[in-house]
Amino acid sequence: MRDETEIESWSAQGPVTELSDEHCWQLLDAESFGRLAIDHQGRPDLFPIDFHVDARTIVFRTAEGNTKVRDLQANPYVALEADERSATTAKSVVLRGRAEIVTDDDEIARLDRVPLPPWIPSRPYTYVRITPASVRGRSFVHHLRVDRGA
Image 1: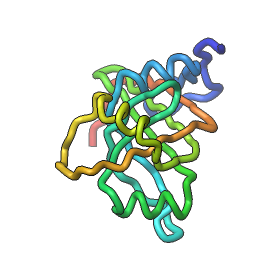
Image 2: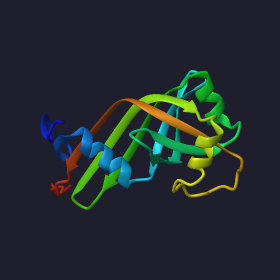
Image 3: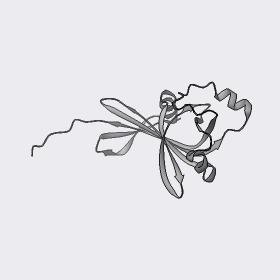
């Protein structure tokens, strides 16, 4: 486990700090909304999703046979980004990995009980599990902008 270490440069928002793996997973566990990046017909596309951390994997559900499902079957490599913001800081975690459609009936029954909001009544759900290849997070400190006059 690595501690939070300052990245060599500063961003326009202020100092940037690399988050430890544990801190990244804590942020992912505390959040439930993120953006899923997938390959859609050879071009990147983003989808807002609600997700759940399940034993250091990410699980989300979607409607059966929709665009995300078709695209994930064609190319399972994805990225997920989730944020935490306050008035003084912002944290961002990007998880890259491989997505798989969950097909085991017992696993689907278990996932039916995880805390995911039913935004769209689209049963039966298709559950997708993302197994991470990498997880990286950064924290940014906001600084007040100085009005230089016009």
